[in-house]
Length: 325
Image (tube, rainbow, N blue to C red):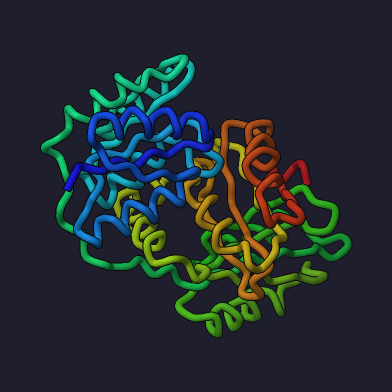
């Protein structure tokens, strides 16, 4: 059987040109227009005993960028050869690609013959073995949005709540309705509900609060496996992702229920995402973002969230110091 490659690009013309070049050289070809489709194709072919010789992906994709796609693929299939192409020079992307075991170069217009040659160099790197189908179970969580009572001391309430051992995050936010947001995680939804009541029901200074319980949505098995392997390999970096010296926002995304799983998967791999969960009511996502500043975070919400299919509304709550409440 001829060796097979996967071509990932949202431009039909680019996929067509590369397909013709590979077919002329005797390769089999499969195409994908975005990163999530690429992950499903990689897993499907590997499980069928016909793993791709290489994945050729564009740097800019509608969902997962090429460098992140490289990292996700190699978290599960470390021997998979991944080539990241671009139509402009991007030193940072090339360095990141090389650091994670990929091959990157910039071409304008695309040099299909060079791409074919680069794939041929990896002829001995076919990843034959399919990793075990293990999963990473994320316990239920909840975001609690707190409205202060008139005259209440926000710093005192924050200090009280933040001292609780199972409160992962406790922040003051700039918002028309809410002043504090908590994030907790427990083993079951029932324990989450009990803990929320215990934390807030008798707290002085709380006028009211709203709870958004979250969980991992039902995902295609292939996406779930890649997500689990990527998370395990990057657990240390994820644990250290939330730092106090960076801009932070809580983002609530109202979306069509049918689109929640794909939106969750697309946003999960964004570098700015610290936490993400799907509402148990299946109509919202809650995302904690961090970036260099709020301008950078606004670019993420505007370009990587608001315009996605299925998104109805995006509401951002910026984390602020006590003295700005």
